[in-house]
Length: 121
Image 1 (cartoon, helix red, strand yellow):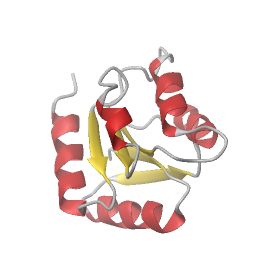
Image 2 (cartoon, one colour):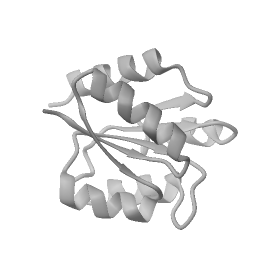
Image 3 (spheres, helix red, strand yellow):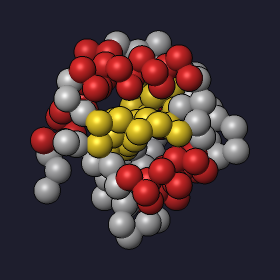
Image 4 (spheres, helix red, strand yellow):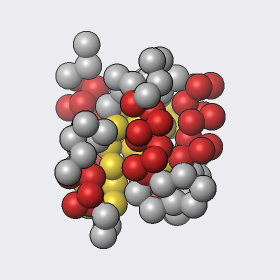
């Protein structure tokens, strides 16, 4: 089963993503900020990451930068979901494979997840 890591400090959003992705046959692990996301990443070895931008402790930009620096995870597709900061993510194609706006369309997220996983080596 393919594992997806969802990093978001808004529990309701993380839960909605979790339920929707699990309904599509994925296993989902969550973290409430980038620092916790790095801990989960080392333990769970997901195939894809979905992260928020604005989070306490370590934001999505710092988190994606840290992931890209890891030899074991630097290749993972990362989707940024953000409201006001989406434009920052769009300028960082070196960090994010896709940038989706909040509020989000769950069908669009699932389609993007499937596309990115299909394109993995």
